[in-house]
Length: 407
Ligand code: ZN
Ligand code: ZN
Image 1 (cartoon, protein in one colour):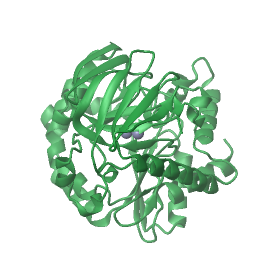
Image 2: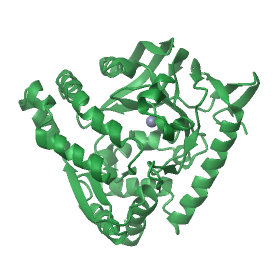
Image 3: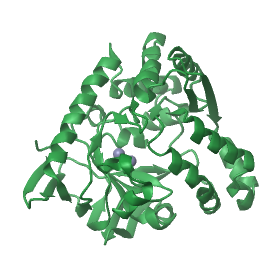
């Protein structure tokens, strides 16, 4: 890929993605796949006047070794220095850039029981720090091609060709055109307008139906607020948490979901694939799951903690988005979630509650915002999906018809 275009992309992530502020610290989380690009991101962050940029390199093969050789206790222990680091992040609020590139099936065969137990041990220690940073810092997830990932998306191609093709797909769907920052201005404005309309309806529940058998009703919080595109931290800094993004989303009310929903794309969870699955909800809770592949994994996912079996997000994405028009199955949630309507199991987003700025997280949760250590999107949208809203005034309004916006 041409360096000038990659430079534009790096700039987009730094300026429009996390919107680095003068004097702010930045952390970049990256795998070993695209060191040249990581360097560009770091340089752009410095050009945006970052104080200090730190890169956290990740190599999934090492993760596998750690899980194999460390005891659950060691894996799950948060060392004092790690806690001190979390405290430091709470004080300094660095901007976080996550560059995804890993093989979506790269952790296959890992001992999930061990991973789950370790996570259940460490999470309660880390949780207070995460809560303290919630909605206060800017973050952005974007992607770069890794070789194994590219080969999975474009099987049968030479590695270098597959990587180049995946670059093209990432840059196309991320609107890295002649003037990406301008393109994102327009895109953000369009999403904001859609959210404004959805919010004006005061939706109390959504009813999803599709030819594959999906028939699900999800209730909304009275103070729920649709969000999409540009976000704003409590410090007042605008940022885009996902590049790309096509969704208008909201956190539904915990305890109000009835019916069955069929996934329309595979889900990569913790580096392993779950395919062709369905989830049945009763009183908001996932009570029955089936999957052609990865059923045990799906079951362990929804039993990570109490909130893991409840919904944390309803997102509306038309079939006419650049990602679904590309026709590519990315095996990566960042892309696939922006190609289809989706739901997420696990923690909800407080910023989808009106007036959350003046509420504690506890208050948000008492209004029906779900809490969990997981947040896993899964795709349910398809060409035959219809969605109808019941509004506060009793009106029924068509939101989606045949997979696209009805308004
Ligand atoms: Zn989403
Ligand atoms: Zn999500």
